[in-house]
Length: 240
Image (cartoon, rainbow, N blue to C red):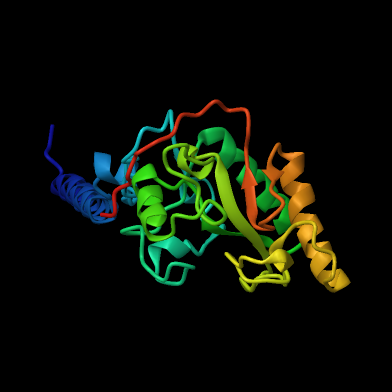
């Protein structure tokens, strides 16, 4: 049998062509292949900022409520934390409005009812520690203006508020007199006032009475929450 050189040559060319094509295909596959890693399969979630923890109450929450922890839109104008009061002397180291929990809940409810009309509440005084009552009494020992601290008042029990209504801009509605005005014009029974003033006083009185509060004859701004059986308190709040 004779060996065919031409056949051998053709077979060699075919083998070399196949090898070249295999090398080209392998190179193309390497260039187009994307490395798959766990990071590419599951994207790393964006970091979510963690809000700072709320400060812990610095008082006995079973006995007291800081009104601003319930609703910060209630306006505080706590006069005895300033010199803008009838004794012209700062009595509180700082202004915080503490009330018994049920009393505070009633105030917030009235405030939110007023908000439906574009109005709200402003607090002139809330719980008044009995040591502060003594300071007032020593300065003005007159039962017409200051309760005797030996007997105490609803303020000293955390069950009374001095309060008024403000508009959406925080301006007080006209009530006929200023806060802590001592005269018949401030009496809740005084009628020689414009109809708008009488209507404002009636609105405040009606809303608070619906939540169990009771006013007094001589001060349109004063309302107490009777029936709680709360003891007189010497608790002084922190100012940090």
